[in-house]
Amino acid sequence: MDISGNVIFIPGSTGGIGLALALALQAKGNRVVVGGRRTAELERIAAEHPGLDTVRIDTADPASVEAAAKEVLERHPDLNVLVTMAGIMRAEDWRRPEGFLESAESVVNTNVLGPIRLIAAFVEHLQARPDATIMTVTSGLAFAPLRATPSYNASKAAIHMLSESLRLQLADTSVKVVELVPPSVRTPLTPGHEDDPHAMPLDDYIAEVMGLIATQPDAREIQVERVKFLRYAEVRGDYDQVVGVLNGNEQLND
Image (cartoon, rainbow, N blue to C red; front, top):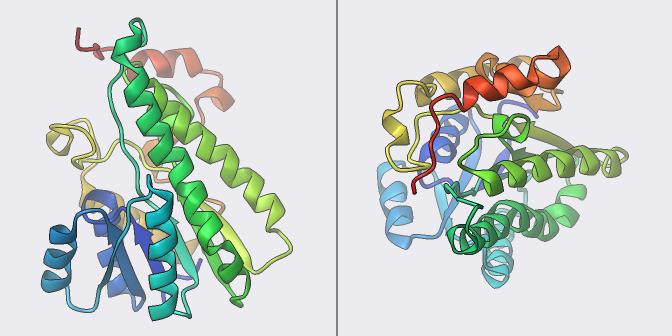
């Protein structure tokens, strides 16, 4: 995708990577619509960041996705970029059914069905634009698993393969499919994660991502250097070692 001149909708961007990316893209001359579940947060963002439009959306709710898509397209008929940012991450213990089933269903609903709903709501419109992009959001954990988060790992692996498949189906259209593959980044994705010294600082991550978008407009995946340790473990032949390093100090809460 081009670094500027777009009209972009980013559901799930009231904080963390989503909001930081929205602000960085706005600063490059894009019109950006921020989507989120909490009306108060959307009002705060609109007040603090003039020029950002906001729309309430819950990607876990099909009716909310349908209503938000209608609202976005009515206000921004020239929309040409969709970023499926919304996602949740939860620790689960699959040794006990009561420890994971409800969480796993929620993660799949948000992280897998959410992007599918969004793409279904916008793909026809995007194909009518002369130059459009669907940016999916996966994780380094799609390629090497964190022991504590089985459903999250699986959900991101599913979106990786969905991205690969959609790219094939949309190859003869105006729509590009780009996969954003973050490493661990200091955001409130899980409690205390914004202070994790092992995670990449958010500002550093966004700066590197914006540089990659600017210099690699035809990239299929946006990979900062730090995520390549996980992304290419199997290719390098050191998958077991990478999984061991990733999980060396990880413990489930009993």
